[in-house]
Length: 144
Image (cartoon, rainbow, N blue to C red; front, top):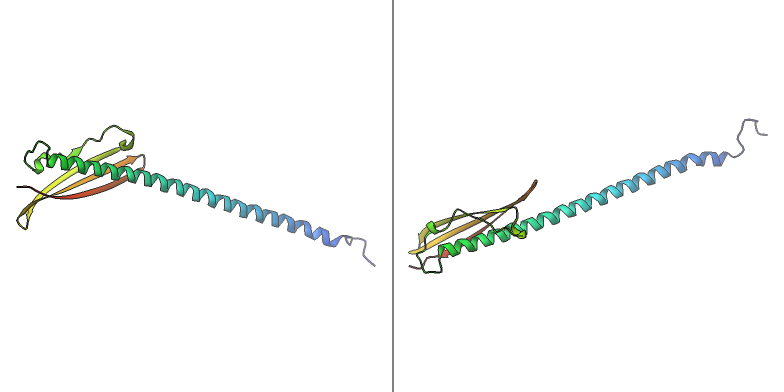
């Protein structure tokens, strides 16, 4: 015989608490998965933004090197001299170059009896906390 205070459905009363624990565990795991996916999405966005700004900086540095070469070897046939190369290049006000600045440097030297030039174009593009820098170096031989 059973005592009077002994529950009739002993198995079902114990199962109610385990379902609650399993439910909390599943919700916690789903929350952690969602947080990880959001973090991965944000990292992908940041990487894409950095890649775009890096490409802009490289294009600006290449354009600066082209400008420096044009100043070093003028089309009118003037003399080649580092004095013709400006210290900076004002980038045009177009969408691809906004937020960018370009510094130029020119060094002349003689190697193996030939007059040579070393041009360095350094572009810095920035937006808010993001700052990207790219450099392009060009070597050229002078025509004497």
